[in-house]
Amino acid sequence: MSSLPTSSGLPLPPGRAAVPASPEAQRAPEAWITRTPSFPFGDSGALAGLSFAAKDNIDVAGVPTTAACPAFAYTAAAHAAVVQKLLDAGARLLGKTNLDQFACGLNGTRSPYGAVPNAINPAYVSGGSSSGSAYVVATGQADFSLGTDTAGSGRVPAGLNNIVGLKPSRGLISARGVVPAAQSVDCLSIFARTVATAARVLEVTMGYDPLDPYSRVLAMADTALPARFRFGVPSSLNFYGDAMASDAFGDAIARMKSLGGVPVAIDYAPLAEAAGLLYESALVAERYTAVREFFDAHEEEVIEPVRSIIGAGRQYSAADLYAAQTKLRMLGQQAAEMWGDIDVLLVPTAPTHYTQQAMQRDPVTLNRHLGTYTNFVNLLDYAAVSVPSSLRTDGLPFGITLVGLAGSDWQLAELGQRYHHATGLMQGALNDPLPAPQPLAGIKLQATVKVAVVGAHLSGMPLNNQLTTRGATLVGQTRTALDYRLYALPGTVPPKPGLLRVAASQGARIALEIWEMPVEHYGSFVALIPAPLGIGTLDLENGSSVQGFVCEAEALQGAEDITHFGGWRAYIDSLNSAAPA
Image (cartoon, rainbow, N blue to C red):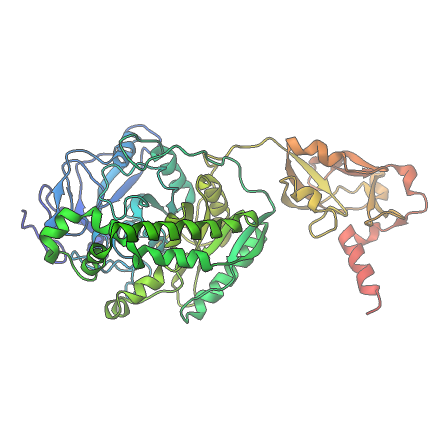
Protein backbone atom coordinates (compact mmCIF):
# COMPACT_ATOMS: atom_id res chain seq x y z
CA MET A 1 0.00 0.00 0.00
CA SER A 2 1.25 3.49 -0.80
CA SER A 3 1.93 5.84 2.07
CA LEU A 4 1.50 9.04 0.07
CA PRO A 5 -0.71 11.35 2.12
CA THR A 6 -3.89 13.02 0.96
CA SER A 7 -5.19 16.30 2.35
CA SER A 8 -6.95 14.33 5.06
CA GLY A 9 -3.74 12.61 6.16
CA LEU A 10 -4.88 9.19 4.97
CA PRO A 11 -2.69 7.20 2.58
CA LEU A 12 -3.54 7.16 -1.09
CA PRO A 13 -4.49 3.83 -2.57
CA PRO A 14 -1.75 2.01 -4.47
CA GLY A 15 -0.91 2.44 -8.13
CA ARG A 16 -0.97 6.21 -8.69
CA ALA A 17 1.04 9.01 -7.14
CA ALA A 18 -0.54 12.25 -6.04
CA VAL A 19 -0.07 15.30 -8.26
CA PRO A 20 -0.29 18.94 -7.20
CA ALA A 21 -3.83 20.23 -7.25
CA SER A 22 -4.72 23.31 -9.26
CA PRO A 23 -5.23 26.60 -7.37
CA GLU A 24 -8.99 26.10 -7.62
CA ALA A 25 -8.76 22.55 -6.32
CA GLN A 26 -6.80 23.73 -3.32
CA ARG A 27 -9.98 25.41 -2.12
CA ALA A 28 -11.30 21.93 -1.36
CA PRO A 29 -8.68 19.25 -2.04
CA GLU A 30 -11.04 16.78 -0.33
CA ALA A 31 -13.00 16.70 -3.59
CA TRP A 32 -10.31 14.55 -5.23
CA ILE A 33 -9.00 11.14 -4.17
CA THR A 34 -6.69 10.51 -7.14
CA ARG A 35 -5.55 12.75 -10.01
CA THR A 36 -4.73 11.18 -13.39
CA PRO A 37 -2.38 13.46 -15.35
CA SER A 38 -1.51 10.76 -17.90
CA PHE A 39 -4.80 11.03 -19.82
CA PRO A 40 -4.54 13.55 -22.69
CA PHE A 41 -7.34 15.26 -24.58
CA GLY A 42 -8.54 13.34 -27.59
CA ASP A 43 -7.93 14.86 -31.01
CA SER A 44 -11.37 13.98 -32.30
CA GLY A 45 -14.70 12.63 -31.17
CA ALA A 46 -18.03 13.95 -29.96
CA LEU A 47 -16.53 15.11 -26.65
CA ALA A 48 -13.09 16.27 -27.83
CA GLY A 49 -11.90 19.23 -25.77
CA LEU A 50 -14.01 18.40 -22.72
CA SER A 51 -12.54 17.24 -19.42
CA PHE A 52 -14.21 15.02 -16.85
CA ALA A 53 -13.83 13.39 -13.46
CA ALA A 54 -15.09 10.00 -12.32
CA LYS A 55 -16.49 9.13 -8.92
CA ASP A 56 -14.08 6.78 -7.17
CA ASN A 57 -16.39 3.79 -7.29
CA ILE A 58 -15.94 3.70 -11.08
CA ASP A 59 -13.01 1.75 -12.49
CA VAL A 60 -10.17 3.39 -14.42
CA ALA A 61 -7.49 1.04 -15.71
CA GLY A 62 -4.28 1.24 -13.69
CA VAL A 63 -5.83 3.55 -11.13
CA PRO A 64 -7.06 2.43 -7.69
CA THR A 65 -10.77 2.20 -7.01
CA THR A 66 -11.39 2.92 -3.32
CA ALA A 67 -15.13 3.57 -2.93
CA ALA A 68 -13.76 5.91 -0.21
CA CYS A 69 -12.55 2.94 1.85
CA PRO A 70 -8.72 2.58 1.78
CA ALA A 71 -8.81 -1.05 2.94
CA PHE A 72 -11.14 -1.94 0.06
CA ALA A 73 -8.92 -0.41 -2.64
CA TYR A 74 -7.99 -2.42 -5.72
CA THR A 75 -6.32 -1.41 -8.98
CA ALA A 76 -8.59 -1.97 -11.94
CA ALA A 77 -7.27 -3.86 -14.93
CA ALA A 78 -9.75 -2.25 -17.34
CA HIS A 79 -11.80 0.88 -17.64
CA ALA A 80 -15.45 0.80 -16.68
CA ALA A 81 -17.57 0.61 -19.82
CA VAL A 82 -18.73 4.20 -19.40
CA VAL A 83 -15.18 5.54 -18.94
CA GLN A 84 -14.01 3.73 -22.07
CA LYS A 85 -16.81 5.31 -24.10
CA LEU A 86 -15.91 8.79 -22.85
CA LEU A 87 -12.22 8.37 -23.64
CA ASP A 88 -13.07 6.99 -27.09
CA ALA A 89 -15.20 10.10 -27.67
CA GLY A 90 -12.19 12.35 -27.02
CA ALA A 91 -12.87 13.49 -23.43
CA ARG A 92 -9.94 13.84 -21.03
CA LEU A 93 -10.04 12.18 -17.60
CA LEU A 94 -8.69 14.42 -14.83
CA GLY A 95 -9.03 12.11 -11.87
CA LYS A 96 -11.26 10.30 -9.43
CA THR A 97 -13.41 12.07 -6.89
CA ASN A 98 -14.40 11.65 -3.28
CA LEU A 99 -17.72 10.18 -2.19
CA ASP A 100 -19.69 9.03 0.78
CA GLN A 101 -18.15 5.66 1.55
CA PHE A 102 -19.54 2.85 -0.61
CA ALA A 103 -21.92 5.43 -2.11
CA CYS A 104 -23.95 5.24 1.10
CA GLY A 105 -25.15 8.73 1.94
CA LEU A 106 -26.61 11.90 0.50
CA ASN A 107 -24.51 14.51 2.31
CA GLY A 108 -20.80 14.27 1.39
CA THR A 109 -19.38 14.00 4.92
CA ARG A 110 -19.08 10.20 5.15
CA SER A 111 -15.57 9.76 3.80
CA PRO A 112 -12.22 9.09 5.50
CA TYR A 113 -10.68 11.28 2.79
CA GLY A 114 -12.49 14.30 4.22
CA ALA A 115 -15.86 16.00 3.94
CA VAL A 116 -16.46 17.76 0.62
CA PRO A 117 -17.85 21.26 1.19
CA ASN A 118 -20.65 23.01 -0.65
CA ALA A 119 -19.26 24.89 -3.67
CA ILE A 120 -21.27 28.02 -2.87
CA ASN A 121 -20.86 28.14 0.93
CA PRO A 122 -18.25 25.75 2.40
CA ALA A 123 -19.93 25.75 5.82
CA TYR A 124 -22.69 23.64 4.29
CA VAL A 125 -22.71 20.07 3.00
CA SER A 126 -22.14 19.39 -0.68
CA GLY A 127 -24.67 16.60 -0.87
CA GLY A 128 -23.67 13.05 -1.69
CA SER A 129 -22.80 10.46 -2.27
CA SER A 130 -21.30 11.90 -5.47
CA SER A 131 -19.92 14.87 -3.54
CA GLY A 132 -16.55 15.32 -5.21
CA SER A 133 -17.96 14.88 -8.71
CA ALA A 134 -20.48 17.68 -8.14
CA TYR A 135 -17.93 19.98 -6.51
CA VAL A 136 -15.33 19.83 -9.30
CA VAL A 137 -17.98 20.65 -11.90
CA ALA A 138 -19.53 23.48 -9.89
CA THR A 139 -16.11 25.10 -9.35
CA GLY A 140 -15.09 24.80 -13.00
CA GLN A 141 -12.34 22.22 -12.54
CA ALA A 142 -14.04 19.75 -14.91
CA ASP A 143 -16.53 20.24 -17.72
CA PHE A 144 -18.58 17.28 -16.57
CA SER A 145 -18.29 14.35 -14.22
CA LEU A 146 -19.63 10.90 -13.56
CA GLY A 147 -21.52 10.03 -10.42
CA THR A 148 -23.73 7.16 -9.41
CA ASP A 149 -27.29 7.34 -8.20
CA THR A 150 -29.19 4.79 -6.14
CA ALA A 151 -31.26 7.02 -3.86
CA GLY A 152 -30.46 10.50 -5.16
CA SER A 153 -26.67 10.68 -5.25
CA GLY A 154 -26.70 12.09 -8.76
CA ARG A 155 -29.34 14.69 -7.99
CA VAL A 156 -28.97 16.00 -4.42
CA PRO A 157 -25.37 17.24 -4.98
CA ALA A 158 -26.52 18.94 -8.19
CA GLY A 159 -29.33 20.75 -6.42
CA LEU A 160 -27.11 21.89 -3.55
CA ASN A 161 -24.31 23.15 -5.85
CA ASN A 162 -26.24 24.97 -8.60
CA ILE A 163 -25.48 22.49 -11.39
CA VAL A 164 -27.30 19.93 -13.54
CA GLY A 165 -27.62 16.31 -12.45
CA LEU A 166 -28.94 13.96 -15.12
CA LYS A 167 -30.14 10.63 -13.67
CA PRO A 168 -30.85 8.34 -16.62
CA SER A 169 -33.36 5.55 -16.75
CA ARG A 170 -32.13 2.37 -15.11
CA GLY A 171 -29.98 0.30 -17.44
CA LEU A 172 -29.57 3.05 -20.05
CA ILE A 173 -25.83 3.47 -19.29
CA SER A 174 -23.82 0.35 -18.54
CA ALA A 175 -22.72 -0.04 -14.92
CA ARG A 176 -20.05 -2.64 -15.79
CA GLY A 177 -16.92 -1.72 -13.89
CA VAL A 178 -18.77 0.18 -11.13
CA VAL A 179 -18.72 -0.87 -7.47
CA PRO A 180 -22.41 -1.53 -6.80
CA ALA A 181 -24.39 0.03 -3.99
CA ALA A 182 -27.73 -1.68 -4.67
CA GLN A 183 -27.09 -3.16 -8.07
CA SER A 184 -30.65 -3.67 -9.27
CA VAL A 185 -31.44 0.04 -8.92
CA ASP A 186 -28.02 1.66 -9.42
CA CYS A 187 -27.57 4.21 -12.21
CA LEU A 188 -24.59 6.04 -13.61
CA SER A 189 -25.30 9.77 -13.45
CA ILE A 190 -23.93 12.84 -15.19
CA PHE A 191 -23.05 16.23 -13.65
CA ALA A 192 -22.57 19.31 -15.84
CA ARG A 193 -23.11 23.04 -15.66
CA THR A 194 -25.61 22.94 -18.52
CA VAL A 195 -28.21 20.45 -19.69
CA ALA A 196 -26.73 20.57 -23.19
CA THR A 197 -23.37 19.25 -21.97
CA ALA A 198 -25.01 16.53 -19.89
CA ALA A 199 -27.08 15.51 -22.93
CA ARG A 200 -23.96 15.27 -25.10
CA VAL A 201 -22.45 12.90 -22.53
CA LEU A 202 -25.67 10.87 -22.37
CA GLU A 203 -25.68 10.46 -26.15
CA VAL A 204 -22.13 9.05 -26.06
CA THR A 205 -22.52 6.78 -23.04
CA MET A 206 -25.97 5.22 -23.45
CA GLY A 207 -26.35 1.82 -25.01
CA TYR A 208 -27.03 -1.82 -24.26
CA ASP A 209 -24.22 -3.86 -22.67
CA PRO A 210 -24.75 -7.65 -22.57
CA LEU A 211 -22.07 -7.92 -19.88
CA ASP A 212 -24.09 -5.77 -17.45
CA PRO A 213 -26.91 -7.91 -15.98
CA TYR A 214 -29.17 -4.87 -15.54
CA SER A 215 -28.51 -3.20 -18.89
CA ARG A 216 -31.53 -3.01 -21.18
CA VAL A 217 -32.82 -1.62 -24.44
CA LEU A 218 -35.40 1.12 -23.90
CA ALA A 219 -37.83 2.79 -26.27
CA MET A 220 -36.91 6.45 -25.88
CA ALA A 221 -39.45 9.25 -26.24
CA ASP A 222 -37.99 11.45 -28.98
CA THR A 223 -40.40 14.38 -29.11
CA ALA A 224 -40.60 17.31 -26.72
CA LEU A 225 -43.52 17.63 -24.37
CA PRO A 226 -46.42 19.57 -25.89
CA ALA A 227 -46.55 23.32 -25.52
CA ARG A 228 -49.32 22.84 -22.98
CA PHE A 229 -48.26 20.10 -20.57
CA ARG A 230 -49.37 18.90 -17.15
CA PHE A 231 -46.89 18.72 -14.29
CA GLY A 232 -47.53 16.97 -11.00
CA VAL A 233 -46.91 18.70 -7.69
CA PRO A 234 -47.05 16.76 -4.39
CA SER A 235 -50.23 17.64 -2.54
CA SER A 236 -48.25 17.80 0.70
CA LEU A 237 -44.68 19.09 0.95
CA ASN A 238 -42.18 19.06 3.79
CA PHE A 239 -39.28 21.50 3.85
CA TYR A 240 -38.41 20.75 7.50
CA GLY A 241 -39.04 24.31 8.58
CA ASP A 242 -37.04 25.94 5.77
CA ALA A 243 -39.25 28.83 4.63
CA MET A 244 -36.72 29.95 1.99
CA ALA A 245 -36.89 26.54 0.32
CA SER A 246 -40.69 26.60 0.43
CA ASP A 247 -40.77 30.03 -1.21
CA ALA A 248 -38.26 28.91 -3.84
CA PHE A 249 -40.43 25.96 -4.78
CA GLY A 250 -43.43 28.27 -5.12
CA ASP A 251 -41.39 30.32 -7.56
CA ALA A 252 -40.49 27.12 -9.42
CA ILE A 253 -44.15 26.25 -9.89
CA ALA A 254 -44.77 29.72 -11.30
CA ARG A 255 -41.86 29.32 -13.71
CA MET A 256 -43.19 25.97 -14.90
CA LYS A 257 -46.54 27.63 -15.59
CA SER A 258 -44.79 30.32 -17.62
CA LEU A 259 -43.30 27.55 -19.78
CA GLY A 260 -46.76 26.23 -20.61
CA GLY A 261 -47.25 23.87 -17.68
CA VAL A 262 -50.50 23.27 -15.85
CA PRO A 263 -49.99 22.15 -12.22
CA VAL A 264 -51.83 19.05 -11.04
CA ALA A 265 -51.83 18.00 -7.37
CA ILE A 266 -50.76 14.37 -6.93
CA ASP A 267 -50.91 12.05 -3.95
CA TYR A 268 -47.32 11.78 -2.76
CA ALA A 269 -48.05 9.07 -0.16
CA PRO A 270 -47.20 6.04 -2.37
CA LEU A 271 -43.95 7.67 -3.45
CA ALA A 272 -42.97 8.50 0.12
CA GLU A 273 -43.81 5.00 1.31
CA ALA A 274 -41.77 3.46 -1.51
CA ALA A 275 -38.84 5.69 -0.58
CA GLY A 276 -38.94 4.40 2.99
CA LEU A 277 -38.46 0.82 1.82
CA LEU A 278 -34.95 1.56 0.57
CA TYR A 279 -33.40 1.55 4.04
CA GLU A 280 -36.24 0.42 6.29
CA SER A 281 -37.00 -2.98 4.75
CA ALA A 282 -35.22 -6.07 3.48
CA LEU A 283 -34.28 -4.10 0.35
CA VAL A 284 -31.27 -2.82 2.32
CA ALA A 285 -29.87 -6.35 2.11
CA GLU A 286 -28.77 -5.53 -1.43
CA ARG A 287 -26.29 -3.00 -0.03
CA TYR A 288 -24.82 -5.72 2.15
CA THR A 289 -24.71 -8.12 -0.81
CA ALA A 290 -22.73 -5.59 -2.86
CA VAL A 291 -19.70 -5.72 -0.54
CA ARG A 292 -20.48 -8.84 1.47
CA GLU A 293 -17.12 -10.59 1.14
CA PHE A 294 -15.12 -7.50 2.10
CA PHE A 295 -17.56 -6.40 4.79
CA ASP A 296 -17.61 -9.73 6.58
CA ALA A 297 -13.81 -9.79 6.71
CA HIS A 298 -13.12 -6.08 7.39
CA GLU A 299 -16.21 -4.63 9.02
CA GLU A 300 -14.09 -2.49 11.36
CA GLU A 301 -12.58 -0.71 8.33
CA VAL A 302 -15.98 0.74 7.41
CA ILE A 303 -16.86 4.06 9.00
CA GLU A 304 -20.08 4.86 10.83
CA PRO A 305 -22.90 5.27 10.04
CA VAL A 306 -22.12 3.41 6.80
CA ARG A 307 -21.15 0.32 8.78
CA SER A 308 -24.49 0.14 10.58
CA ILE A 309 -26.49 0.73 7.40
CA ILE A 310 -24.73 -2.01 5.45
CA GLY A 311 -24.66 -4.33 8.44
CA ALA A 312 -28.42 -4.01 8.84
CA GLY A 313 -28.77 -6.01 5.64
CA ARG A 314 -27.62 -9.15 7.42
CA GLN A 315 -30.75 -9.48 9.55
CA TYR A 316 -33.27 -10.16 6.81
CA SER A 317 -34.45 -13.49 5.41
CA ALA A 318 -35.30 -14.36 1.82
CA ALA A 319 -38.96 -14.28 2.84
CA ASP A 320 -38.49 -10.73 4.13
CA LEU A 321 -37.02 -9.71 0.80
CA TYR A 322 -39.94 -11.15 -1.18
CA ALA A 323 -42.37 -9.34 1.12
CA ALA A 324 -40.55 -6.05 0.59
CA GLN A 325 -40.47 -6.54 -3.19
CA THR A 326 -44.19 -7.29 -3.24
CA LYS A 327 -44.88 -4.18 -1.18
CA LEU A 328 -42.82 -2.13 -3.60
CA ARG A 329 -44.73 -3.52 -6.58
CA MET A 330 -48.03 -2.60 -4.96
CA LEU A 331 -46.84 0.95 -4.24
CA GLY A 332 -45.60 1.21 -7.80
CA GLN A 333 -49.03 0.35 -9.13
CA GLN A 334 -50.63 2.95 -6.87
CA ALA A 335 -48.12 5.57 -8.02
CA ALA A 336 -48.68 4.66 -11.67
CA GLU A 337 -52.19 6.10 -11.52
CA MET A 338 -50.80 9.64 -11.40
CA TRP A 339 -49.31 9.30 -14.90
CA GLY A 340 -52.78 9.31 -16.37
CA ASP A 341 -53.11 12.92 -15.21
CA ILE A 342 -49.60 14.31 -15.67
CA ASP A 343 -46.79 14.38 -18.23
CA VAL A 344 -43.99 15.06 -15.76
CA LEU A 345 -43.55 15.30 -11.99
CA LEU A 346 -41.98 18.37 -10.36
CA VAL A 347 -40.33 18.05 -6.94
CA PRO A 348 -37.68 19.93 -5.00
CA THR A 349 -34.31 18.26 -5.49
CA ALA A 350 -33.61 18.65 -1.77
CA PRO A 351 -35.96 20.14 0.83
CA THR A 352 -33.31 22.16 2.66
CA HIS A 353 -29.61 22.79 3.29
CA TYR A 354 -27.64 21.63 6.33
CA THR A 355 -24.34 22.83 7.71
CA GLN A 356 -21.55 20.30 8.03
CA GLN A 357 -21.65 20.71 11.81
CA ALA A 358 -25.37 19.95 11.97
CA MET A 359 -24.92 16.89 9.73
CA GLN A 360 -22.14 15.53 11.94
CA ARG A 361 -24.35 15.91 15.02
CA ASP A 362 -27.28 14.00 13.50
CA PRO A 363 -25.94 12.14 10.45
CA VAL A 364 -28.78 9.68 9.96
CA THR A 365 -31.91 11.81 10.38
CA LEU A 366 -30.65 14.82 8.42
CA ASN A 367 -29.29 12.61 5.67
CA ARG A 368 -32.73 10.99 5.38
CA HIS A 369 -34.30 14.44 5.04
CA LEU A 370 -32.11 15.21 2.03
CA GLY A 371 -33.56 12.17 0.25
CA THR A 372 -37.20 13.09 0.81
CA TYR A 373 -37.83 13.73 -2.89
CA THR A 374 -35.24 11.41 -4.45
CA ASN A 375 -35.33 7.96 -2.80
CA PHE A 376 -38.38 6.66 -4.68
CA VAL A 377 -37.21 7.40 -8.23
CA ASN A 378 -35.02 4.40 -9.02
CA LEU A 379 -37.15 2.03 -6.97
CA LEU A 380 -40.13 2.89 -9.18
CA ASP A 381 -38.09 2.85 -12.42
CA TYR A 382 -38.31 6.55 -13.28
CA ALA A 383 -35.90 8.89 -15.07
CA ALA A 384 -35.02 12.29 -13.62
CA VAL A 385 -33.00 15.45 -14.15
CA SER A 386 -32.15 18.02 -11.50
CA VAL A 387 -31.64 21.58 -12.71
CA PRO A 388 -30.84 24.83 -10.87
CA SER A 389 -33.88 26.94 -10.09
CA SER A 390 -32.81 29.92 -8.01
CA LEU A 391 -30.47 31.34 -5.40
CA ARG A 392 -32.24 31.80 -2.10
CA THR A 393 -32.05 35.02 -0.10
CA ASP A 394 -29.21 33.49 1.93
CA GLY A 395 -27.25 32.86 -1.28
CA LEU A 396 -27.64 29.07 -1.24
CA PRO A 397 -28.86 27.29 -4.37
CA PHE A 398 -32.27 25.75 -4.79
CA GLY A 399 -32.79 23.06 -7.41
CA ILE A 400 -35.81 21.28 -8.82
CA THR A 401 -36.09 17.79 -10.25
CA LEU A 402 -38.20 16.75 -13.21
CA VAL A 403 -39.25 13.09 -13.00
CA GLY A 404 -40.67 10.99 -15.81
CA LEU A 405 -41.32 7.41 -16.81
CA ALA A 406 -38.42 5.22 -17.95
CA GLY A 407 -37.38 6.25 -21.43
CA SER A 408 -38.42 9.90 -21.02
CA ASP A 409 -34.81 11.03 -20.56
CA TRP A 410 -34.64 13.25 -23.65
CA GLN A 411 -38.02 14.82 -22.93
CA LEU A 412 -36.90 15.65 -19.40
CA ALA A 413 -33.64 17.11 -20.70
CA GLU A 414 -35.47 19.28 -23.23
CA LEU A 415 -37.83 20.69 -20.61
CA GLY A 416 -34.99 20.94 -18.10
CA GLN A 417 -32.92 23.00 -20.53
CA ARG A 418 -35.81 25.40 -21.16
CA TYR A 419 -36.40 25.71 -17.43
CA HIS A 420 -32.74 26.25 -16.55
CA HIS A 421 -32.26 28.93 -19.18
CA ALA A 422 -35.38 30.73 -18.00
CA THR A 423 -33.77 31.25 -14.58
CA GLY A 424 -31.00 33.59 -15.71
CA LEU A 425 -28.63 31.95 -13.21
CA MET A 426 -24.86 31.76 -13.54
CA GLN A 427 -23.14 28.41 -14.00
CA GLY A 428 -22.35 26.54 -10.78
CA ALA A 429 -20.15 28.58 -8.45
CA LEU A 430 -18.73 30.59 -11.36
CA ASN A 431 -19.58 34.02 -12.73
CA ASP A 432 -20.19 32.63 -16.19
CA PRO A 433 -23.63 33.18 -17.72
CA LEU A 434 -25.43 30.29 -19.36
CA PRO A 435 -24.62 29.86 -23.06
CA ALA A 436 -27.39 29.68 -25.62
CA PRO A 437 -29.58 26.55 -25.44
CA GLN A 438 -28.58 23.77 -27.82
CA PRO A 439 -30.60 21.24 -29.82
CA LEU A 440 -30.62 17.87 -28.07
CA ALA A 441 -29.65 14.81 -30.07
CA GLY A 442 -32.53 12.67 -28.83
CA ILE A 443 -35.29 15.16 -29.69
CA LYS A 444 -36.58 15.16 -33.26
CA LEU A 445 -36.70 18.57 -34.87
CA GLN A 446 -40.17 19.03 -36.32
CA ALA A 447 -41.00 20.98 -39.46
CA THR A 448 -43.03 23.99 -38.34
CA VAL A 449 -45.02 26.87 -39.72
CA LYS A 450 -45.55 30.30 -38.17
CA VAL A 451 -48.99 31.82 -37.97
CA ALA A 452 -50.05 35.27 -36.71
CA VAL A 453 -53.21 35.62 -34.64
CA VAL A 454 -55.01 38.83 -33.80
CA GLY A 455 -58.18 37.86 -31.93
CA ALA A 456 -59.80 34.92 -30.18
CA HIS A 457 -56.65 32.79 -30.61
CA LEU A 458 -54.45 35.16 -28.57
CA SER A 459 -52.96 33.88 -25.32
CA GLY A 460 -55.67 33.58 -22.69
CA MET A 461 -58.47 34.02 -25.23
CA PRO A 462 -61.25 31.43 -25.79
CA LEU A 463 -59.78 29.74 -28.88
CA ASN A 464 -56.12 29.70 -27.83
CA ASN A 465 -56.43 25.99 -27.03
CA GLN A 466 -56.82 25.30 -30.77
CA LEU A 467 -53.15 26.29 -30.98
CA THR A 468 -51.76 24.73 -27.81
CA THR A 469 -53.44 21.35 -28.31
CA ARG A 470 -51.62 21.15 -31.65
CA GLY A 471 -48.24 21.69 -30.06
CA ALA A 472 -47.96 25.35 -31.06
CA THR A 473 -45.65 27.58 -29.06
CA LEU A 474 -45.70 31.34 -28.69
CA VAL A 475 -42.79 32.90 -30.59
CA GLY A 476 -43.46 36.52 -29.69
CA GLN A 477 -45.64 39.59 -29.87
CA THR A 478 -45.40 42.30 -32.52
CA ARG A 479 -47.60 44.55 -34.71
CA THR A 480 -48.66 44.68 -38.34
CA ALA A 481 -47.39 47.21 -40.83
CA LEU A 482 -49.45 50.40 -41.19
CA ASP A 483 -51.81 49.11 -43.89
CA TYR A 484 -54.44 47.33 -41.72
CA ARG A 485 -57.69 48.11 -39.93
CA LEU A 486 -59.42 45.98 -37.27
CA TYR A 487 -63.17 45.38 -36.93
CA ALA A 488 -65.39 43.61 -34.38
CA LEU A 489 -67.41 41.05 -36.33
CA PRO A 490 -71.08 41.06 -35.26
CA GLY A 491 -72.80 37.90 -34.08
CA THR A 492 -69.70 35.71 -33.76
CA VAL A 493 -69.34 33.23 -30.87
CA PRO A 494 -66.93 33.59 -29.26
CA PRO A 495 -66.48 37.22 -30.35
CA LYS A 496 -63.93 37.56 -33.15
CA PRO A 497 -62.30 40.43 -35.02
CA GLY A 498 -61.69 40.85 -38.73
CA LEU A 499 -58.37 42.23 -40.00
CA LEU A 500 -58.56 44.06 -43.33
CA ARG A 501 -55.70 45.27 -45.52
CA VAL A 502 -56.14 48.89 -46.63
CA ALA A 503 -53.94 51.60 -48.11
CA ALA A 504 -51.08 52.53 -45.78
CA SER A 505 -52.42 56.07 -45.43
CA GLN A 506 -55.71 54.70 -44.09
CA GLY A 507 -54.43 52.01 -41.69
CA ALA A 508 -52.66 51.55 -38.39
CA ARG A 509 -50.40 49.07 -36.63
CA ILE A 510 -52.40 46.23 -35.03
CA ALA A 511 -51.08 44.10 -32.16
CA LEU A 512 -50.70 40.38 -32.83
CA GLU A 513 -48.98 37.23 -31.60
CA ILE A 514 -46.88 34.87 -33.69
CA TRP A 515 -47.17 31.17 -32.94
CA GLU A 516 -45.12 28.28 -34.31
CA MET A 517 -46.91 25.00 -35.00
CA PRO A 518 -45.82 21.58 -36.30
CA VAL A 519 -46.64 21.37 -40.00
CA GLU A 520 -48.49 18.09 -39.49
CA HIS A 521 -51.14 19.89 -37.40
CA TYR A 522 -51.47 23.02 -39.53
CA GLY A 523 -54.09 21.62 -41.87
CA SER A 524 -56.46 20.63 -39.08
CA PHE A 525 -56.04 24.09 -37.53
CA VAL A 526 -56.88 25.94 -40.75
CA ALA A 527 -59.92 23.68 -41.24
CA LEU A 528 -61.41 25.15 -38.05
CA ILE A 529 -61.37 28.73 -39.35
CA PRO A 530 -64.93 29.84 -40.29
CA ALA A 531 -65.82 32.21 -43.11
CA PRO A 532 -65.45 35.14 -43.59
CA LEU A 533 -62.05 34.62 -41.93
CA GLY A 534 -59.13 32.95 -43.64
CA ILE A 535 -55.36 32.74 -43.80
CA GLY A 536 -53.32 35.18 -45.85
CA THR A 537 -49.96 36.93 -45.82
CA LEU A 538 -49.56 39.70 -43.23
CA ASP A 539 -46.88 42.36 -43.43
CA LEU A 540 -45.24 43.20 -40.09
CA GLU A 541 -43.87 46.46 -38.76
CA ASN A 542 -40.27 45.21 -39.11
CA GLY A 543 -40.71 44.65 -42.85
CA SER A 544 -41.07 40.86 -42.70
CA SER A 545 -44.19 38.87 -43.48
CA VAL A 546 -46.01 35.88 -41.96
CA GLN A 547 -49.11 33.80 -42.56
CA GLY A 548 -52.01 35.04 -40.45
CA PHE A 549 -55.72 35.75 -40.04
CA VAL A 550 -57.40 38.07 -42.54
CA CYS A 551 -61.04 38.87 -43.33
CA GLU A 552 -63.10 39.34 -46.49
CA ALA A 553 -64.04 43.00 -46.99
CA GLU A 554 -67.68 42.21 -47.84
CA ALA A 555 -68.21 40.75 -44.36
CA LEU A 556 -67.33 44.00 -42.63
CA GLN A 557 -70.36 46.02 -43.64
CA GLY A 558 -71.94 47.26 -40.43
CA ALA A 559 -69.02 45.95 -38.31
CA GLU A 560 -67.61 48.27 -35.64
CA ASP A 561 -64.22 49.73 -36.55
CA ILE A 562 -62.01 49.20 -33.49
CA THR A 563 -58.68 50.10 -35.10
CA HIS A 564 -58.10 52.93 -32.61
CA PHE A 565 -57.72 50.39 -29.79
CA GLY A 566 -54.57 49.07 -31.46
CA GLY A 567 -55.55 45.45 -30.96
CA TRP A 568 -58.23 42.97 -29.96
CA ARG A 569 -57.06 42.53 -26.38
CA ALA A 570 -57.30 46.27 -25.66
CA TYR A 571 -60.79 46.30 -27.16
CA ILE A 572 -61.95 43.37 -24.98
CA ASP A 573 -60.44 45.04 -21.92
CA SER A 574 -62.45 48.18 -22.69
CA LEU A 575 -65.67 46.18 -22.81
CA ASN A 576 -64.89 44.46 -19.51
CA SER A 577 -64.08 47.73 -17.78
CA ALA A 578 -67.31 49.28 -19.04
CA ALA A 579 -69.45 46.39 -17.82
CA PRO A 580 -71.42 47.08 -14.62
CA ALA A 581 -69.86 45.59 -11.47
